[in-house]
Length: 382
Figure (cartoon, rainbow, N blue to C red):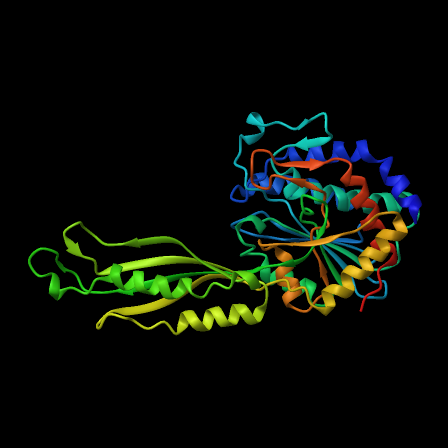
């Protein structure tokens, strides 16, 4: 299949043009109208690429989702692309940082690597296979969401329903800075520990108070002992709040906890330990609120099989496919935790996610398009 790499290498300028077009749509998650403008452009692209059906999934708080399907009546489990069109950048960012290309072949622009580069690859791979007359007779789906940058709070139920029967989920988040796929992602959970004490005058009757800050400090020391960094578990107290005035024994205090884990087992252990916290000071009350959570994308036997197949397809195309991981989460955490085969980091190489130096390595675009095209043709579902 090395002809795929030759073909897509010849599409490099077209991919640069496509990516530039996408970046020039400003799509902050919270601006529904702007996101929907790009959503309509994407609908037109799917239609032009011959999608057999395009379903709009209306949203009120964020941009509408789209589910595009090719060969939906063909046999076999669908191959599902996950893409999101929202970015972290506010309107007006493009005026400050328009699309530029440097002498090293890097395309800079807000949203370029996260994840309009990945969207460019999906559109180009489908277009290329159709132009070559090699688009496979198998179900191929693309789910486009618009709230990934705020935790996919609206799209998770939709994603779970669509992904549950798929043969492979291809998450078009960017590759690592070195160009590797992400075959593990840490799970994450955030908590707030609340402490209730009793207020008293710090000068006249301090003995009648129950100091919530002192209690919280002792809880933080215990929480800090839950860290197991050598095995990938971090439990970080990142924000604290407490007290009402300089001369009052504090009646309330709280702390925000960020937790990252490699395995579901570790996540369950952390949750159990936090729920078992007991007060040290008589009369104090302690409770834990879970704010947000996402299960880990584990590097398990299924992931090993999926990566091995992807790597073998890459070799047929003429590419070396490598693997790595990430401490941050993505929608791939959700589908992998469901037991659905998932590969993440299939987007382009680059750097600067959510940063002013955000960029895509242009030469990685046709390489990834060739890999994706090869996977569409050759993938064997479990």
